[in-house]
Length: 313
Image (cartoon, rainbow, N blue to C red):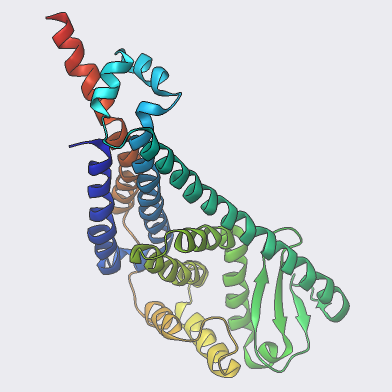
């Protein structure tokens, strides 16, 4: 079986079995940090495999063909034989254009998301300088009846609290919510969401990318919720979340099923992922990321192993 077909099989397996496994795995929400990593690893591996399908189709017609043959210690003709794909140079050209278009779109959308967010953030910071009041505890207060607490990441990062939230939350609940927002800022969840959105918008039609975007959107909130665990009061964090959701009457960014799942999680016990399982997730992620490259290079490795033996004989 040629490298493109093996990669297509990998894409199909990862998009179905990998997606189903992560949707059903309890540890994904138990340890959202690892859950975010797992979903991003899965989608990046699938995206890499899709691009490599096109690259492997075009290898016999690429300038890197001779370098790859030299690394494998075989002749270019032997390499061509193991990457032989019907269609000739026209199919290779189309495949390369498709690969470049997909990779370029992911990069362009990620950059666009970051630039647009930065522009909107600077605009909000300018407005906050006019209407906001710096609090000694390190956040900005604005007069607004709707209870909201949110953060502005990046340069000049800020946590913003409305007067409605101050009147609604107790001092302890406010402290927990502030810790939540500061976790978002430290973890740079905005970058993770930007990449996830770019992948979902590039590979439209593959459900795994849409699921990853939805899951990571929830998991970043759960990871930030774990600031309450560090402070020893998950239930107070759950109360604060409910108060903001109900008090905001739908104005908050997360008041639907995701908020309900977060409240249930905060109200339960056992929020720690064991070290062994964490190490297993890390190892599996590394293997998953390496798999597309290994599958793409498998014919060259096979050529180096068997063709050299035949030449020796």
